[in-house]
Length: 192
Image (cartoon, rainbow, N blue to C red):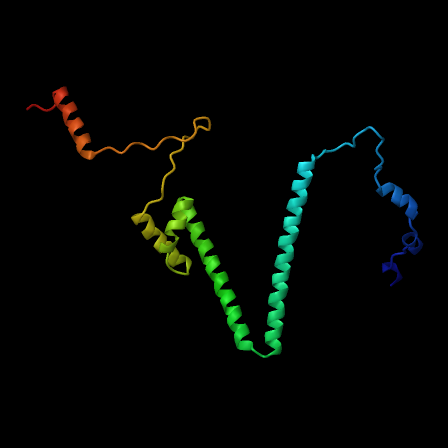
């Protein structure tokens, strides 16, 4: 049984390798800057510092408002539990659940429309035409929508330096027929 035990030097684990003051010297960087010299790193203007502070304060304010709202809702729920108004608490929870489901369904519809090639404007406009809660029913209504209203095509030149290509002009079919007839007549294919 003694052959399975490992001899350990417990004193090795109990002693500090460096004293605390030496450890502090090692971990603290030299922050002293000689007068007349700027510290290395980025120097900010007063406007940039003001903007950074303003952003930070706005984030803190938004965070505190969220925390206050959460605390208010929690206190309201505790009060309802104490007053044994479980029905009202249940109804509030059901409303929140319905809102979450509606948001998730809207996000799913948006993703399906975007994948099908619809633009942001079209997604906002045609989201209401996708019916159903399951993937199968949404896919079926998407296919129906694609046959009725095809996605808007972006005319983009594949070359990055050329930019966007203009949309081709639509021609009147009657005029196209007349011009085709004139060309055939002039080439001698049609005699009249």
